[in-house]
Image 1 (cartoon, rainbow, N blue to C red):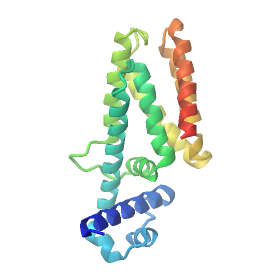
Image 2: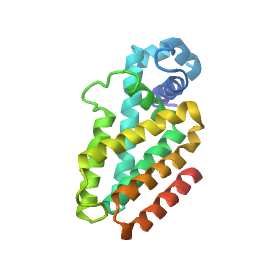
Image 3: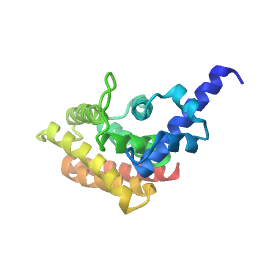
Length: 215
């Protein structure tokens, strides 16, 4: 195996192992020795790639940022109406949380006081901008009431998304997340969407939940 490929595989194994431990134990309770053991690499190999635990946390946040942006690009490539796109993006991010410890670890890191180093942007800032943009589009497309306070709704939606994921951790299996996001959307749709358009979006939320659970 070429040396560069082997080094990249080792780096990926270390990041994945760190994410798993950060997710399950928390950042403060996880040592670099724990991560090396979990990744089945030597401490020398770990230090070759990461000089400190903070560097590993940053690498996890960067990896999740790339995955989230890719999910957004894939949804935007479908050319959906803005509200549908927003719903699909929230379920795509939920699916990442169910399937990937990196997504779960990122949330635990950023809500646990671990700093996000520039030029990486805080994920909540990116989510807020995305939700605001999609809601403004949905207003223009008449899928959302024109008199809503878009910025207030965007803040509420981001807070709801974060809160659902945080509450799920101690209360129920992570596989229950799609159901909780569906419940969130059923509440939001009834408050945001004009009555004639509600059936379509209520049905879409249920469909997206089924798809998320099936993957």
